[in-house]
Length: 501
Ligand SMILES: C[S@@+](CC[C@H](N)C(=O)[O-])C[C@H]1O[C@@H](n2cnc3c(N)ncnc32)[C@H](O)[C@@H]1O
Image (cartoon, rainbow, N blue to C red; front, side, top):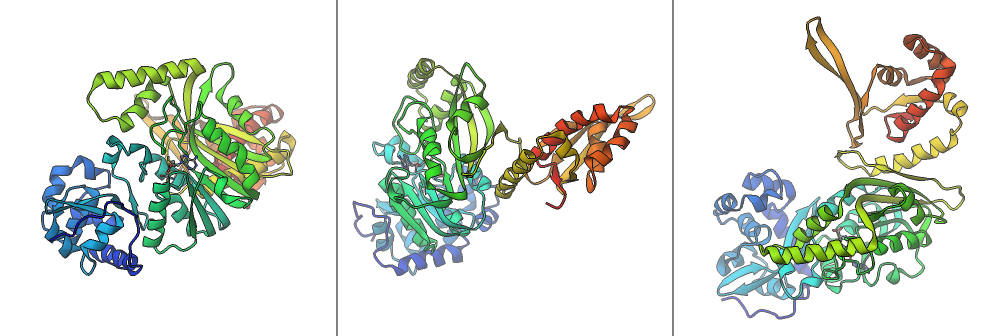
């Protein structure tokens, strides 16, 4: 017999030892990223949704792991007895009281999602909550934006870190591994409760979960790192606290960017994953530059996408509206488009803003397209982008740049394409790319390939010029400005580095 259900889930165990018991239970069952996937023979967690019938079959064995997967990953109820067996030595009462599960007609169903992610176990809301009257309080889990920000976070040792809009706490917990103390702030009390539960479940003691409006709860504290995946979606709605900032256009993100410098230690970084409105009249880079005027920060904006109003509205409406009712979609869609037209928004940029406080200016601003691929953790590549831009600021004169020794990155690869012809194989193209982190890629030609190969850190660019000029039958003096222009781009993207770095 299952006990009666507690009507107010607290996301807390009454017995403090239950956190350790639950952790032990999940670990023993193999409820970790890799082992789960191995156990049910799928490639990645998203396949859980697409391969539902197959997974029902693969989890029919009734092991503890199968029961946990059915409950928390597939959201399939299990028999009360099976559940009670699976969670031993814990009791069904403690699970019900904590708000992790609910019972109905002799079955137990998940009340939250429980997902393994990067050696953490995280509880957050079930997507079905988006269709209920409580939807505005929905606490999101691991979305695409979560994964992107976690990959791009600069993971240097930090004394104080701030996660703004922490949701279930994922960024705060990842940052806790390289921070002395982390403040995790969210306006949604449900998110703060879930984050606090997750902190205890993962035995993390250096994260404070605070409820409030962005910087409100942290007083005068200063941080070495501020990270935020804010409610950045630009729309006329205020339906979901996790999605809609509730202010006009991109004001929510802009306000975070404007306030952040006051909370940053000198040299500290603030990283915001977000969307911004691109209006007519000037290019997007100029518009973004205005956000940071007088900020005392060096800023790098990496744009990963720019969408038309129609594509943007459709993408975000489909995120939360699952109904097949086309008129419902259409009404909302036109309401969103009218709003964009009223505000004069022509496109929507998406990407990462990274700010570094440097009060002794002058500060630099850089805004460009991000690479198509990001391979593995990219935080150190973002930090290196700042060092490279600092270097480029010191060699703005061609003469200064030509006096430098540069070396190609160890991650650089040169590719040549050969095409068959009557006369044999001919080189018909070449490309360069990086194999790690911000994996920039670009077309290359013989000149560029030669330049890269010769940049082995031993000769200055000035010393390399005569050989290049001879190969190209060009005048070294005329070649110099072209070489410098090209070199600056190659350094910016991390293909070439100052020798010794
Ligand atoms: C896009 S979600 C990000 C959640 C989580 N950090 C992640 O990356 O998966 C945005 C979060 O910001 C929170 N939020 C919305 N408005 C806020 C505000 N004014 N102050 C603090 N947090 C806010 C939402 O409750 C939500 O948890």
